[in-house]
Length: 442
Ligand code: SF4
Ligand code: SF4
Image (cartoon, rainbow, N blue to C red; front, top):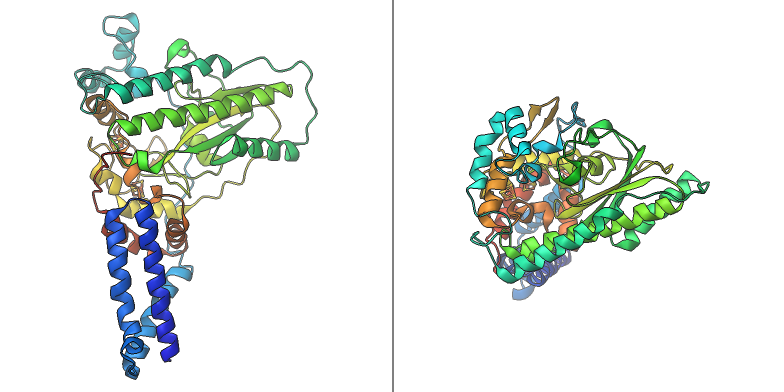
């Protein structure tokens, strides 16, 4: 028995020391200190008899072993719990002209401006609020940094250079392809080009905006012209995102729009070279709603903040899509109700949101689907106050921690056990703070 107890004590100490070291490397000072302290405190009663060279009383030995077994059971024994969950598909198509990205391009006094607010008078007053702010990427905004804003602007300009390449004419000769083999090739290519995850779905009508809302696509009716969509994600750097809502997060956001855009454009060009039609959907040039496509391609679930929650990086990703008629095999999209269940209990993003734009409580019925819907008007108004694309919600999400052994273990526990899911929320608050402070530098 002594051997078992001292073995458990050593294991606990090694575990917490490793967590502490990992947290140190992540530059999480609070988590480093707490795991160091917890390791010493928790392993102490287990190691005390060995340290003092005395025999521990039976009641203490049995108690300590029982506590250790309880923790292992809670963590490793699958407890699904009863999760109310149905895979939600919107019943309507969304008009891109109603997005904030489209509305912010409307210039007062123009025909477009008048036409929009005649059709949507309810949006005029909230939009006037963001128009009174200094503006996104503008001097005078709270986090304006001349160097970093200029850097972000130049990256966004580089994304724009890609826009003419999103579409093109396919090669005249169409290569015969085996759908299984070409699916493998396309997904492998996405990975080699730098995507973190990728998947395929059949394109549904609700994936595609009903009407375009940006650039020369404004007012154009979009038809569902392709059979398949390839969705891909790229990782946004954790350390830079931890500065959100300050300027470094904006630069990182722009960089990853560019990276995902390049991958999508290259994939689309590859497909066209095989004689099939393909269109890349990249920043400021989307015809599809990327999070919905990515969800149906099996890359994650849509969480409380309305973003794609991937299993490995949570919402800390950017998404791009390629739509095509190349015959592909859709990925098996296995819904993950555990993420939704976790979101129902967590609310951390709603607590920290400076725009108070993220709803509390459970999902609501919105246009035929139960989901959370953020207040995009107050969110965008905050962007125009901050000058950046904020991203506070993304950074504090317990799923957004770096993809290393410790957080993979925690995510396994969250998926595996409804009991651990409940414990993971206060534990995340304890280790990282209920309202983690933004970092000064990335
Ligand atoms: S912070 Fe919490 S509630 Fe918000 S998306 Fe992440 S897990 Fe869900
Ligand atoms: S980006 Fe910022 S303002 Fe918008 S929902 Fe997230 S935390 Fe709130």
